[in-house]
Image (tube, rainbow, N blue to C red; front, side):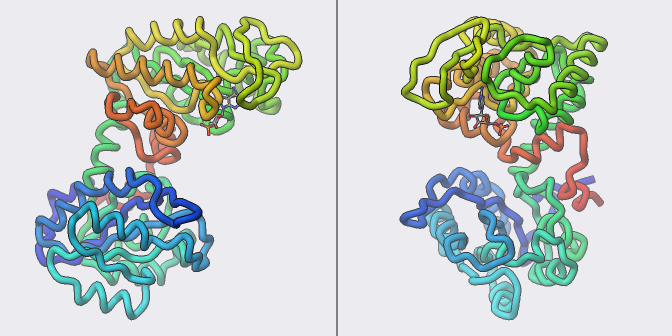
Length: 395
Ligand code: AMP
């Protein structure tokens, strides 16, 4: 059993909350460019404050690889947090050591202490025992609210957990589990998975797992060209993972044996170069020298009709090179169709990463049932794997 923060006694306790403040920073000014991740942690932080906890927050930011990299300090995140909470946030210039121990010991009820980037210490990602104990020594209660790192066995997600007396999950993680777990068991039918993005290799395991659950797999993105190649369809100069064509064949065979439909694009937006500002056309057959960069209008229609009738939709990976506006229509159409389906009561979940970025860019994130904050974590969960960060919390 895993306890939620509401089942923990927080009054007068030093509550260590592992948050995900891995926010994008402006390279020139060093300021936080997008505070969505900080906002996502607010319900848990505010709840702990209200319950009289002494709140200690810890996160990683970027990839400092065990070194102190001043540009990856969490201090700017602390400034934003302080503004959002409307109260001071004490900032510690490290996450372990005497200074931090003193700050955590002196912390008063309802006050907030933010620790410096955990990954300034290589011991964090190495899940090193002594470092884990040092983090644990700061707290009476451990709460994980950083879904995006729960698939990693690090000191702050796994190592320290058993050294803290009480433990549980925050509201963000609870919401992720509530929306993602039904996709593994008992999802309303018809159940569709829409997969796109660059590589088949990243998605093989999740396809294998979803194949036993879904009624249809709709494929787009560069990934589709490896599948089309496996079916012997010419794809011109489109991006293909040659060494994965056999895997794609196996998936197609398995699908037909288990009566899972696999839909591949029937038309494409193509260009001679994978960039904006060059002439594009829509074709059903890709000639040599042309690259498929988005699904075409007929494919959009086909996918839209399926989504309109679905009971459950899980989407991961853009349908084309959506960062360039000429190739964004397919991805936008999927996002639109999911928003419509959500309105009529279907369960529509977007996995993290690029598809989450895309739906946010289209302004539709609040119109689907759930957008996961964890790209890798949501995929691993759907692969049927137990996430180390979740296992560590089980009592
Ligand atoms: P992933 O990280 O696997 O979800 O892949 C996302 C990336 O795939 C995005 O940066 C897209 O631009 C890229 N992508 C999607 N469709 C295509 C395509 N048809 N050709 C090349 N790149 C693509």
